[in-house]
Length: 169
Image (cartoon, rainbow, N blue to C red; front, side, top):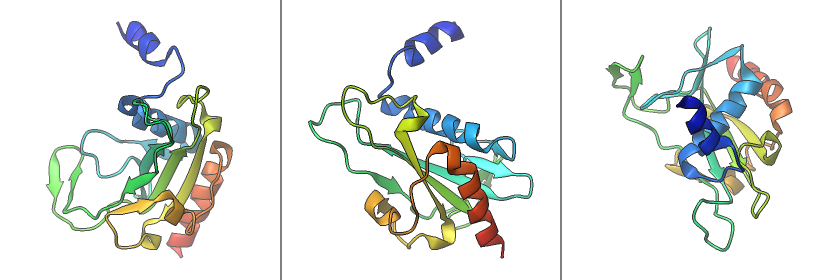
């Protein structure tokens, strides 16, 4: 059954909002593991963590949507502070703010017939320390580009490590 579902979901070019988040996180996991553990789940406050307690949250967006709009979608990411987070999936920790130390904004900017969310080369990533984010609920890709430069998957681990050193000083 798993093989059948995988073939139906991933056996052809992928442009779907339902699976895009998992695909983006899987691509990031390929770049960051084993130093980072992929720990996202329903209601998780972050998506990756390191043994030293550092936490990283992934936000993703794509120009091509599963519904046709006739033009690329504007990339907007939710970065609103939260009232708390779930620890281990069972314990609510009431703590206002953003529980992750770093954000990776993943953007799939390819639009048209060749768009395929499964292809890591079609994604660009922006690594931003939480402390560098403005106090807003949403942030546009154009504003993120003022804070961080785009990197391909192959450079993601190095870029994340540089950001870790910057926030650890």
